[in-house]
Length: 228
Image (cartoon, rainbow, N blue to C red; front, top):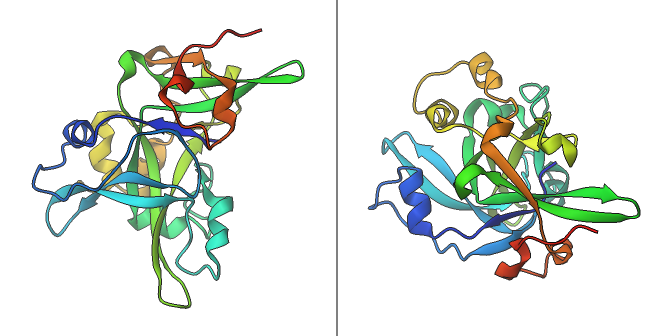
């Protein structure tokens, strides 16, 4: 699963990397060194009417449009790639509402005896990564509108397998257009993108155990930590 991450890159850098026109609205996105589900995070979508990408803020934890309660989002922070086109919570979003989720890195935990050591997982060169995401709009009985997203996961590559049996789908730049719907792609082509990212372009390093508490959000969390 992917349930904790860091996004500390400046919003201007995010817009540059993902080719979002400068005239598009720029939301307030504070650095988050320990992002967690239910928090608001940025996503990249394609606005077909404007013919441009946009940067929007949504709640982490997808709430299907037909859900009766916002709490459904707790169970939908991730969407398994396997069967994504048939699962009721995700099939409509997979067909019509896909997005990219920018992260600097994500965190996973490795069991070391009775202890659990957190690791940061990122791209080589500390580049921004683009995770495959799905989004939805939900309206509460009172009329409140909530936009939310889930991160698509797949089997791990050999590097991430040392930590967990799942990893988020990281999309290479040449596949962003197809995923966002900028060019025509059938569902079979889209499903073929939901595969492990090459391990030789990724790095992992141990970080401070304080990352386990979501209230800890300072930059020192990602400094390399000694493993006992």
